[in-house]
Image (tube, rainbow, N blue to C red):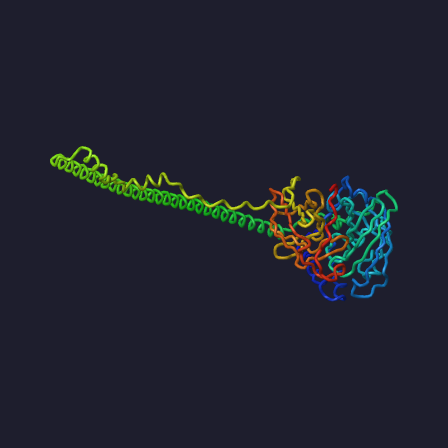
Length: 499
């Protein structure tokens, strides 16, 4: 979780991280190189806020027990006892507490993480990076990180917190080694431990000697140099003015070209609209002509029918046909309805019921993740992870990378509150990638078989809130010390505070 000030330090840190992937001998060298190079950090100390983490202030007795099966080499001891103290200051967020420890980790990991000789523990001279610690309390859980400014090499503790004692598991970040721990309170008074050093040496500049008087030759040379500099400045100003004039001409030309293109587009649109109007007028004229022809045809058919009826009436009158018979013949004669070639179909169409449109697609089921009720911070990242099986948010750690995989921040955290949000992480605008590698299954540490990778874009004008939805019983896990068979997690995460 370190913040680097220069690209050279980032390159050295990346080289040190590659050393961790080599065999055991190379890892020792990589740890020394990483601790040597990451020496200049931003002074991120700040007052701690009131909250659950305030309970960490004071001095504690810490016992570390090593699972020997988790190390590749035989350790010198299986247990380390020491002390850890927390102050009222915070390092990452005001909800954390910054402190220092006095544990000799040499019995577990060799002499790579020993504080300098002759330095009093928890004193003002104890400014070594290897004694730094950062802790926090969330509900009834406690988390402590040794060497929190580095994502590899230090150890992380996670367990149940009872106020004056705690116990749980610990593991070494980026390397082998894990076990369980016991934490017991010795005092409640905060310890004034040394803050993170600024790392910038103070330099006092010596007063310059008075200048010597110039000789005539030096004065002439200086005058000549000043004249040349003045002439060059004048020439440069002329060049700048010419460049500005050319840029202005180019801008005017671009505006004129855009205006011509816009006029052409408007003319083309008008011509297309005119062609469409002419086509529509032709279609309407053709429809009117067809309707007129149909009307004439219908009139001719009606006139023919009337003439036929008159002829039938004359014949009946000449032959003495009874009026009843004539009426019967009229009623029996077929009656031809008026032709409706042009309008009949339309009437039928108007009276017909339009076919029912396809039923709308069923709305997608709403997400089972509860909505957020706390607003995020603009330009900052918050991450939460939700288990569909237990319907709970749960706490885990995640890393933040650049999209090309370069490491930036490690051991960031999600939360297990009502909304599940972890601490807000302010970052410069840009594209990043979230990586989650492990999670807690009951009181054991499980590892995802395939890491969760989630891209995210941070914008200074809006909060970047990321919700990750998983189903832990269906997520494949890889084999580890706590999970030798590589089985999926069947235990639900711890309950949320207040649930």
